Image (cartoon, rainbow, N blue to C red; front, side, top):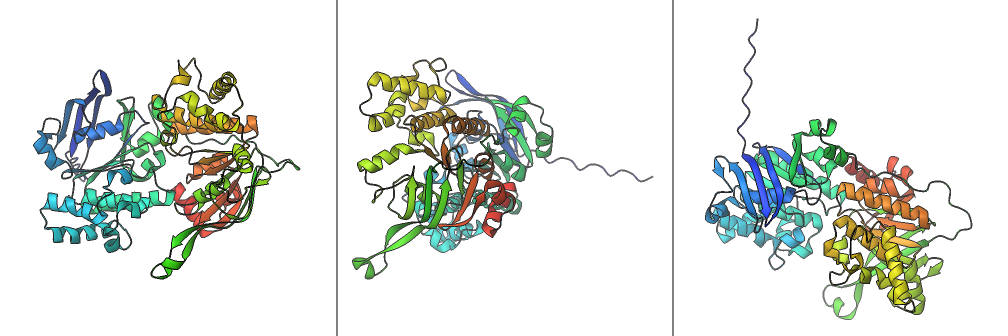
Length: 544
């Protein structure tokens, strides 16, 4: 009888978080959280906004502002919560590094990317400036940035979103950390770039042996990347286990709700009625920007960059046209032309009427058309004025398009519109006098939808309307948009890189790449049997 070989002992945890409490004044935002991170492990900390996941991660670096911390966070025997500030400077960017959600705000706009990476190398690895500059280019090259020598001399605004995120990762890896905290590192990226960044982090993690704590609300991303997952709700860790365990048999009701929050299709199907004019249509649409020419030629003439080339589409009443493509594909330029904000050539009509050129001029004709097409932006916090009350924000369109309307009637219309999107005085006492910062992300997006609909348009341009929202809030906002489309016969132009949202909302879809429409047709036909290689790439990246 053969002896059973002894089981190999589990490695000692790299980090042990024990009974962590985080309090701001009288408000406790993290309550009794405990988890381990093993060497070389990829742990995902998931939950909605306000669940405490980012504060938990920032507490490991003692970067949670004026928070009062209790409990322990042991890293190979040292309690991070008990170290002096001087000792923590060696931990930050040394043993533990962090990649932030929005690299444009995390990177210094006054320094080149190479200088910022080299600065870490000089401080943490005691390299000379020349050595740091050379090593910075090598680090940028390891993250897959094309032409790393040239990109090292670029400023953050001169890089694309994916390139900026790669530069942030290079800065984090400069100190060879044992633990990398990645806070929503792919939220602002297109689906193909999202996959590339995930693959990059996985490759670098295998090469360096570092552990990764991924902070996210993107569950498909967790499935693809993580080894284990820990779920937080309102400051409490409610469930943790391997990805297979948690996704295959979730134990907590909150985890089941998160996993079940995929966008659901609930739209008007069937054939469009004949004889009803479309909300918008375009043919051979072209949008170009003037650009300076190099050398002496630039003194006498301007060149042009063609952002949209010969695009055509039709949006019937009560139907949704989805527009998908990566950053730089031309989809936002297409939307701005439809909104009458950019000069264009070719055919473009809204509610049966063309824009009076130049389209961005506010002539009486164009102002009438502007009432027929309104927009809901990606980030409601930045698109709503923080200095205006709810009544002023939602009623602004009525003041512009119906200046003769009495103030009492305008206030009644505003209150009715708010109630239609699910915001009432009963829920929020003093609703009309409140300001945007007093609402959650989903509630602010409802305010943005109310502002767009109060002038009773035929067409809404939805520019990534749910990409900044948690999965459960995303489902609620999509359900609201679907209901409003049925009740008001609204048409939507939906700009997104989320294939799941397109499947749930769109009737037709166009795929854009480098300013051209490379594929178009009914949503199921295009997404289930894509003909163009680029469309197949988008669909496969979303399914991975």
